Image (cartoon, rainbow, N blue to C red):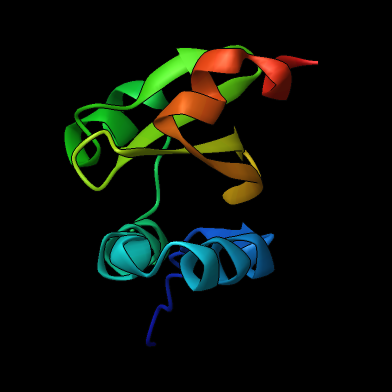
Amino acid sequence: MIAFCYHRLVKLIGRDLIQLFARKHPDSRSSLKSWTQAMESNSFKHFVELKKTFGSADQVKPHTVFDVSGNKYRLIAVVDYALQSVSIECVLTHAEYGEGRWRK
């Protein structure tokens, strides 16, 4: 008998926000692509595991904040570890992030 294991990888929701941001800020494109590939090729059981891959990630509940392009940009997402999904809420410049409007 052959046993099959289903290993569920992370599903990204809101990929269009990344594409829109990359069009406006072309220098972010390669970093956002790397972030997307790293996120989609993993599965994380909890924040501690995610932090091993994304060392600069921070929890600002209920959000997870990722630094992109050496902290030039911020990607804000809600990570559901049980469903293995990441809902991208917004991608911002560091200045936009500092204004804090994304928290509302």
